[in-house]
Length: 92
Image (tube, rainbow, N blue to C red; front, top):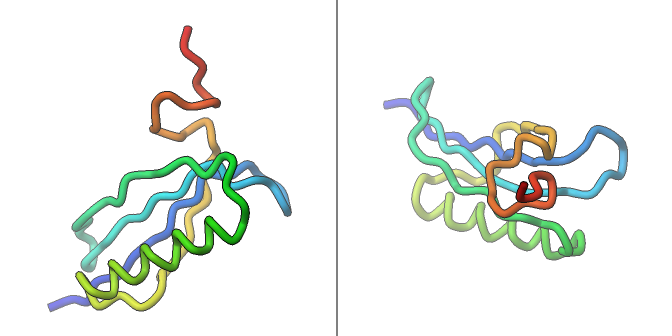
């Protein structure tokens, strides 16, 4: 059977030290998407809180899937953030 791997999805504007808007993750087995970890807003979090959350995510992935680290990082524009309400998508 194929091993599981995870992709960390970071909603963040282009640039060197831009703020992280939100974080999500996907768990894959081969070409099959197995699970999605819903995004959470990071607005107002400091860097250490974000890193702490990512560490906790990996602990859960390790327990459930044997995943020790993220295989890749996907950076998406905050305009693609699916969370509502969202500062990038003000209510009309």
